[in-house]
Image (cartoon, rainbow, N blue to C red; front, side):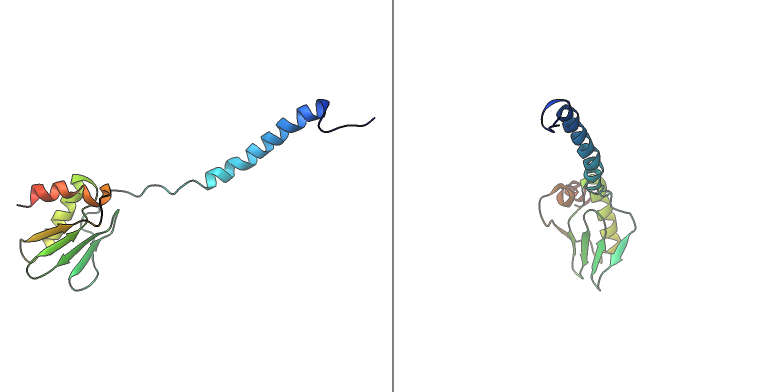
Length: 124
C-alpha cells in the first residue's frame, strides 16, 4: 500500500498543520519588528544645554536651537503646538541679551513649526 502526501487524509491534515506552525513561528517575528515607541513631544522646561559661546539647544522632539547675539536672538524651530512654543519662548527670554527675537523653522513638519502660534502671541 502506497501513502501519498498530496492525496487523501494525510494531505487534509498536513497542510493546515504546517500553516498553523508557520503562523506560530511568524507571530513573534512580526512583534519583534514593531517600530520603537513615539518620542515624547513635550519639550522639557529648564533643560537648555550650552553648545558653544552663543548657541544653546533644547533637546527633545525636535531639538530646538537658540542662537544668542548682542543685537538679537534667533530661535530655530518651535516644537509641536502652543505648549512647546511657550516653553521655547520662556527659555529664549532667559538667555536673550535684548528683546529682539527672530524665528526660523527648518521645514514645515508640525513638530518643527506649529509652536509658532505661541511665538506670535507672546512676542510683540
